[in-house]
Image (cartoon, rainbow, N blue to C red; front, side):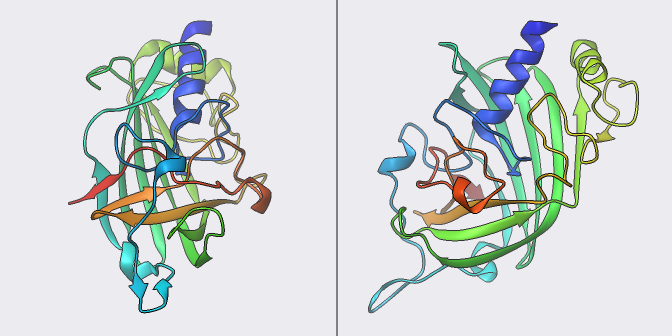
Length: 229
């Protein structure tokens, strides 16, 4: 049980959105976006430009459905790797994220899935990540689904959601937080992130800090990009 909880915590923290996913903190490198195999600090973007240089992205620029090109691997902080996929649906003002964590490198053995929804705004160009735009992504809902009994028991024991967990039955965790990874929405109503577009792929910020405050906004984009469907 402890092993399962540790795997979930490090995998989710290395990745998400919310972002997405939900107020996560990690000591390892990893992130919401980027191209496979590169690091966030190496990523530059070819976002909207003008004669005078890069221009901040708008909601119209990022609207659409964006998904992982394949199984994404992130360091788990223990010498191994965690595996996940992400699927974003963005309008000009709202974001939805389906985020799944897996127990294998081929992303075949699903452990749990998170479904997150909320509004977002985009602002000025980042001062630290070339061509990236600062964004704030708020949380309205954050529902998790355990895909095996061990995960369900882990969530029940951690006090996530409204009661005992059942396999493949979603519960909202925004009111309780979960396994030290998803914050209560009341404690972390939004995340301070980065957004960039490079070679037609959408990137989010490198998730190595607690992003619930402006001070936690990433300084670089993450290592995996999302492909537009």
